[in-house]
Length: 337
Image 1 (tube, one colour):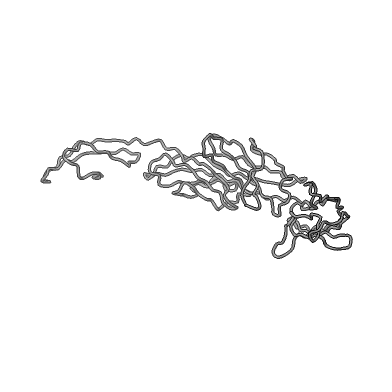
Image 2 (cartoon, one colour):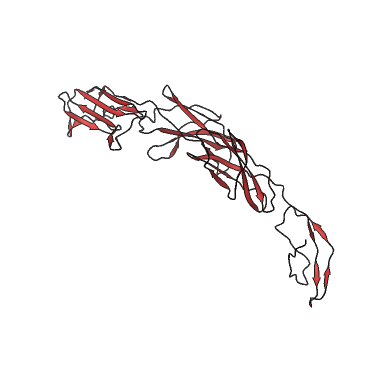
């Protein structure tokens, strides 16, 4: 069946550009009609096949964990003209490849039917243009699974290798989620291999929450805009405990001027209207000279604004650990001036 594609040529027109065509052979002819619309003359038939670029699959840029139950993927546009939609396939360890998992007209997708803390997921895409031409598959992208454990007061981490970038992976870094700001901060040296271990307990001792970590894969590219992929978040906890010094010297020399404890994995201050940390200091006559519910604070050797006498003082700590332990300790400290 022939369709009229341009009904209003002028007598001087001798050419036509036909666009938005599909990967097919087209047959054309021209009809000439006199001004009185009485006579019609038809040309010969001729065929043409438009230049249609060989289809390539959409390039998946990143698969990254974007939340507790979210994996975010996004991709570059296919080279097919007039893309109508994308077909996403998904692979899980239980099901294998799920063909035609879903279709999407955007260039990104948030998969919420996932458990990135435990499972590996792979994705691949095809594109479909307005003519129904389906591209081959592009590359495959998969998330990073991070696992962590504590052994002998060291945090050990292992992660699966990230796979997607043509140029490869430049390195991996480990980040910690800062409890005050909630922002991620890089704290480890870079790792070139897929797996590694990391230990740096001394910096983050006094944190009254679980210490949470993730691994970040960095794309090996010289481009200004580098892609990154984040793993799931792993929160690990050291056993709760405290250390209390047995002497201090409040002489304003910036050395051991304050009597304070060092703690690991304790709740701080007041939680749900319940005092969960209490630190008290008494003199030899039973007078309480200092008290705090904040383990970051300590005693400066004064009472009611006056310097206390160098002596032996009694202290009591009542604390609760994030691991459920109740810590009650007492002892003595010597003040030296």
